Image (cartoon, rainbow, N blue to C red; front, side):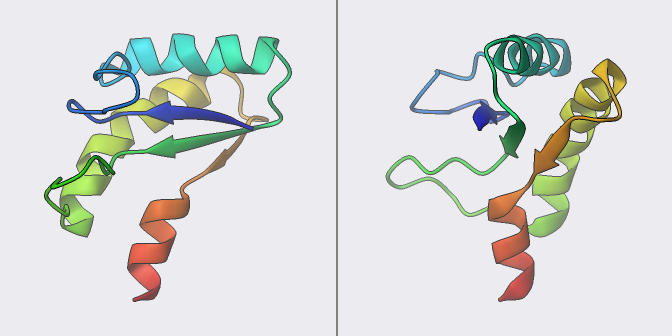
Length: 88
């Protein structure tokens, strides 16, 4: 599994993949390196990060998801944080 953070304030990558094309390039690299699933996250998990509303999280995710899906419709993409939020 590979992870693509599409947060402008990611503590793990400094927001490198917030741009949809950067997210696409990252996903492509992860797939080339052997990832069979791409986890895309738009909610920062850094300490003191503001919890996003679902609509705001979706607005961050959508451009990256479209861009990644354009690489291949066969890539498996998971949205763990968003699913957990929707189940609350």
